[in-house]
Image 1 (cartoon, rainbow, N blue to C red):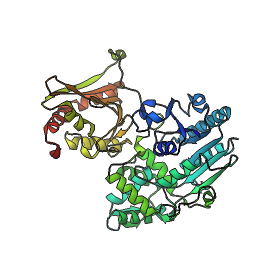
Image 2: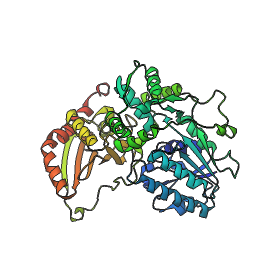
Image 3: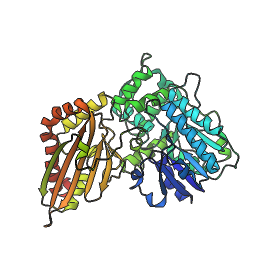
Image 4: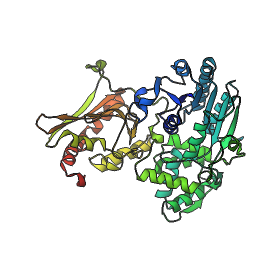
Length: 488
């Protein structure tokens, strides 16, 4: 089948594409920024089209000749995301009808109740729009998805690992039917072929276990080899307060944690398992919760996490590349530039650069970086805890703590764009240049474009610390590159 995947830079979409290819399908990906798919392992096997479901840009071209559309886009974390989701779904419906698409496949959430959260309401509304579109649609309704790198799994993981004693809201006693990412992907791939042409309905999908969130925390602890957690229930902890607590303790920022927590105040148990009539369960059954956690932790341990929630850019998030105009369009710009000669080949220095961030650190004044991360979290930013997907390799579009990889030229250049809360825009650039005699010149540049008076004040308030932060970073990267491999 000829398949269009929207949301291919996201957690589920980035895993679905290679599986569709493995099943023999042709795949086209729609993305606002094609650069973000440039370095993924399967980039050369798909067609990549620039476009945006929210603005209709590129939709007609993306739909041309397509038989199955996978809709994996959600404006989670954006202001007025319900309006954005609604308009985006309507845009896709019009384009799909005009192009003669045979099926839409949508991954949504549990059926919203009378007092549903905005997150579940929006997902339910999008599913209804597709089911009423006139284009045969299959809607999968999943609750918590368990897999390495998913926002739900990261939330569960960090809450359990960091809090041996936790004051819990009453929603941790609600029943949930989690599902392993491997089973979600199996259903999605099957949706391209197995359903009769006129099937137009929603299916509840879930794993074999029905648990409370408290059960999930205790069973996670057991699989991870941790002691049983002490959970102290308290009724006054509202979803709003809970989301701030989650944002403080886990890598998931408040704007993502809030709708996720809001969804957990409702029970999410499958009301039917009709999907088995079209996609039979595996001979050894669906993946249980304990096995799903074990597989996810193994992926994390072995640095084999395919995709992460943090690598999806929120709609409306800043994505402008570093300006190239030599006069910077007449605006103000601040720079901090450093360089060091290193008596080792360029590839030695590059290995240190590409491994920067996450658990590997920033080679400079750890307390300063930690404080900056805490301050960013305090004002609703992403902070440092997003880490990195792989300890050694990066590709364009990946999140790296409170940066995002804007450009990478292997062996030569790494450019990061800041995603912390700032009164302006900022980049950090690291470059490796051979000196012609077997050594290396390491060049480092921080660039800041201030916004208004607050931006200028910000730069000058932090400038006194640059010698410690950026200067120390340049020196330590050079020093680390000269050490024997084992000590690095």
